[in-house]
Amino acid sequence: MALSATGCGNQTSDHMKTYGHDGYMGYSNSNPNMPNRFGTLNYNVDGNLIKQVLKPIDGIEQTQIIFNGTTVHVNLHVNDKLSDADVAKVREKAQSVVQYNMPRYNVHVEAKR
Image 1 (cartoon, rainbow, N blue to C red):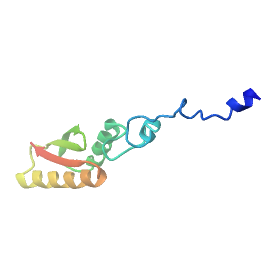
Image 2: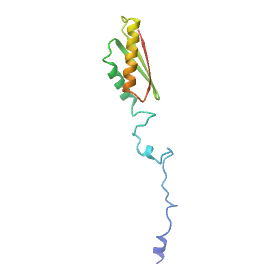
Image 3: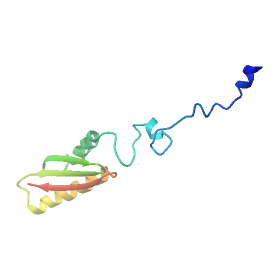
Image 4: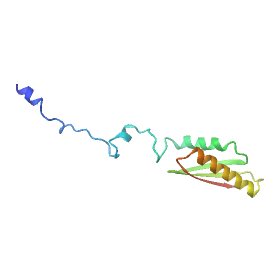
């Protein structure tokens, strides 16, 4: 009888479950690969996508991509033979295409000869 009385006691205070200090009961700790609006799974994947969507735009010779949190800077080296108006058109087209394909980022595109 003594054993059955001890089995009915309150044991939750001795073995309390705790969650990580993430503010949402451990969900982000238990799902570390779950994407959120403040980051990405891999900047390399996003950089490759940016290069892919810029490839069809004529006049781009080289592309440099710099990530800084939720901001991405895309520096384009365009063909030297393009006029100032054409450089501006390439920059505007690249800005539009990258922003459309990467809505979670603040996109800044610069184009220089």
